Length: 162
Picture 1: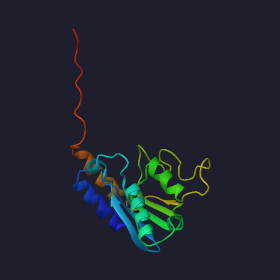
Picture 2: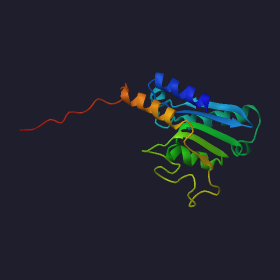
Picture 3: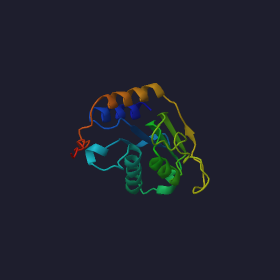
Picture 4: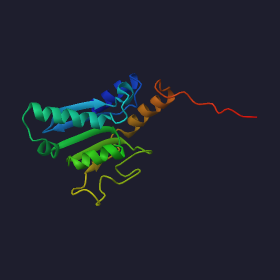
């Protein structure tokens, strides 16, 4: 979790929403990333998605079966995975997700939607542990939202027609 928080701090310095993620396979870090949405101008470049891509690359480089590796992956992330990321992690059958604070707007592990344990589309429930270093994760988010997003569009002023 230390490395995930370090990555989140780097994200904050880069003016990204400060979310850091680390993926362990057999107790070894094989993927680590932070949000890179503003940097890449790509709305799906969440920390978890970046890590998924790194795991796929690692499996290719090490001649490992991706699906078998993902079943043994432990995910550590500073903020509850959003609905998209939670669905991706569940589809890949990762073994465990541990996160810091809840995601009140987009949380997929129970805060907004129960993607982690909904029985409709997935075979196996996602094991989730929440609240690890919660206050620290919240403080990083507060620090981000105190600042300005340099990539936000300029507000459009409505013209009054007389």
